[in-house]
Amino acid sequence: MRKADKAPEVKRLESPQAGRFERIVLPHLGAAFTLAMYLTRNTADAEDAVQEAVLRAVRYFPTLRDDDARAWFLTIVRRVCFTAYGTDHRGADVISIDAAGPQLVDDREQPDAATSRLQVQQRVRDAIDQLPPLLREAIVLRELQDCSYTEIAAVTQVPVGTVMSRLSRARTRLAGLLQDVVDFGDVA
Amino acid sequence: MSELPDLHKAMAEALPVYEAPASLQAWAREEAKRADQEASPHHTFSAPSRARVWGLYQWRAAAGFLLAAVLGWGAASVRPGNGAAAAASATTNQLVDAHVRSLLPNHLLDVVSTDRHTVKPWFAGKTDIAPPVVDLVDKGFPLLGGRLDYVDGHSAAVLIYGRRLHTINVFVWRTTTAEPRDGSFEVRGHSLLHWTNGGLSYWAVSDAAPPELEAFREAYMQ
Image (spheres, rainbow over the protein chains, first blue to last red):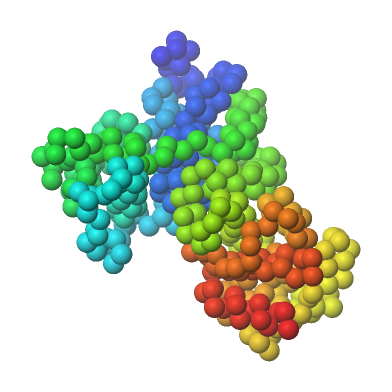
């Protein structure tokens, strides 16, 4: 909340302060790349998406008000991912046969706790991977990037209620796959 | 039951939070500096960045290696399960990146020709690698042209062949000691086939099925 930025109409006519974009947007490059990785699931596309997002962010930077630069930047990233890089946001609710099949791992009989932990991690990754993109996006933003409901709503440009419903659907699906290894509280 | 982690903890343990690749960070910093410098009331920010064009080639090569090696989201499917798997996955990831990049508009060919007599002399003027250039149109692999590329620390001559609707990029460079062994690989839904012959290392990369690449190699090496 710097004084100079108080009046948006005036701000746009003034030269932005030196180093402003670098200071305000660049710290979120890692978060942007992480989101892009989980949306595109592909390193090359994630890099391209973030690069494109930076170029767009530079262009639209004058429209950024004093609100959350992270949410603003992530909004651009996910839009690039969904439009330019073919992430299908309609989210085909198809689960591959491999994924839907019963888990043939009996955790009680794992000889080695470390092996079992790696297997659990792999199962968590697989389960996240199988979520439809909109649900995956919501749960990644929430649990991995520690965004608030309000921030997720800002990034994905839907009402908070929709965010909560997506998170709940994501948790329900994950609970179906991971119930034996993750504590879902009363969601499951 | 009580010792099960909650979802937050389970995800934090299982899922990587990524860092942007160093080269991407460096590019973004330059871009930010440029933007901040050029920022002025009447500036439209619309000039395309020259750094971007340069950057595309520069950082992709390095970034593929860094991420693939450390995290390997898609690298788990690299087949040879020996100690060289990590090195192999770095190479194969970069090859797939280069292949995918080549499919972007206007990136595929430096010399467009279905005539091997055009493609081969073109290479001769640009590189000391002289891969055999054969047209295999009668075997179902029409020669589309050639390109120079830089992959995994090698200058590579690239031959481009078609296979029905698929494109096969054949990367050729001088064999080095640190090569993954010959064989087929699969990375992010792309097939790779590696073989060496006469001091040259060949990598065929395509989204066509692995047997198609085998068929290609047989046709090409005859």
